[in-house]
Image 1 (cartoon, one colour):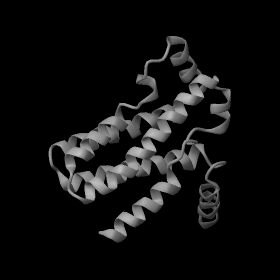
Image 2: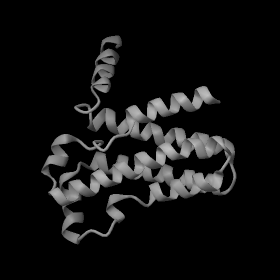
Image 3: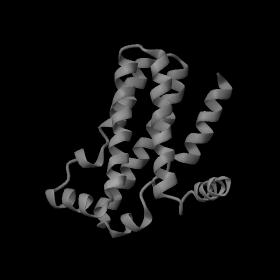
Image 4: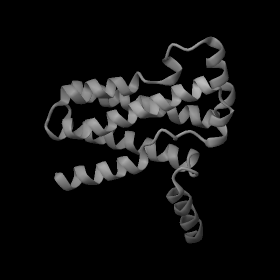
Length: 159
């Protein structure tokens, strides 16, 4: 179990960052929105790190609480102006917004299954959540995580 947790933490530290968003998309946003996005990513990072020890110790109530906070950190649900909401939809790609929505859906599922005490599903949805982080970074943050750019080159050579 310790090995699994260690592996998850290493993957998490490498995968989660305040810079998930495509550099060009973020650079086009107003400074106020960039600050909100960075705050959201930092909150998600903290939550993802805290879920591992809570789950490992069997504290599913804590897992549910953290997952709920991650789910509700959705930038589009924060108290921002209508103009800022419009800016987000205008400047962030539809693909990015769909990935973000999927991430929050998994966080909601993790909140639900941990609240209901479904231990086997807690691990499953945590894995899906972490996969969402990696999926976003591999498509929208290769400048921040060059390993993902290298991985896509390797895959192309195998075909």
